[in-house]
Amino acid sequence: MATHRVSHEPAYVLHRYDWSESSLILEVFTRHHGRIALVAKGAKRPSSNFRPVLLPLQPLQVNYGGDAEIRTLKGAEWMGGHVMPTGEALLSGYYVNELLLRLLARDDAHEALFDAYAGVVQVLAGDHAGAQAATHAAALRAFELLLLRSVGLLPSLDVQTLTLEPLAARTRYSLVPEAGLRQAAKDEAALAGADWRALQDVLDDRAPFTATLREVATMNAGSNSALRNQLRALLNYHCGVSTLRTRQMMRDLQAL
Image (cartoon, rainbow, N blue to C red; front, side, top):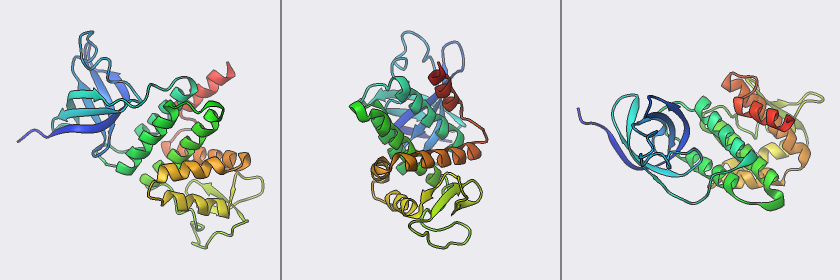
């Protein structure tokens, strides 16, 4: 049987594990083949060409081969474009990586989601001066929405999920695990129907990450907070945790 080989594949390293004294197992998100596992033989040796390249949140082009569940990395090249995010932006990048590791099945291609991931990493690595925190938050919300939709966990945002009735512009609705989008109870995190419908429109845009980021960035602080809390609850539910590890790390650091 011929060995399956892939060349010049756009990719990002999501996580890395020690495999031996000299080698690593990589969890990699590729554009055309989805999330895959690769063994990077000798990558921990000081003389290895892989050593300075196999970093998270960096655009790569990889060559690999093999038919087993864990393929063998043959080559990796840094594609440039931006430096490594730092500080809270770096933790946000690790948070996005954790979401992909938990929610994406292996060998399931999501090309549009890969492009959205590249977009959010670019934002996190950029310098947006005083608007940096708000821009980073909007980018995270946009990516969360696109990830949930890509893996089939986001209902249509222009109708009530159970009844399929259109949303009233001024009525408040909540996005709830298992129940989908429904009319909100009092004091429940919610958005107006007009806001949910606007989000559905930008998710259907030809450039959904950029369009969704812009839409979220124009929301007022209250709507942004409500959207964040609802998406966080939905993501935690589907990840099977009360708090993601990277989110807990952010809280711990902020407490210090």
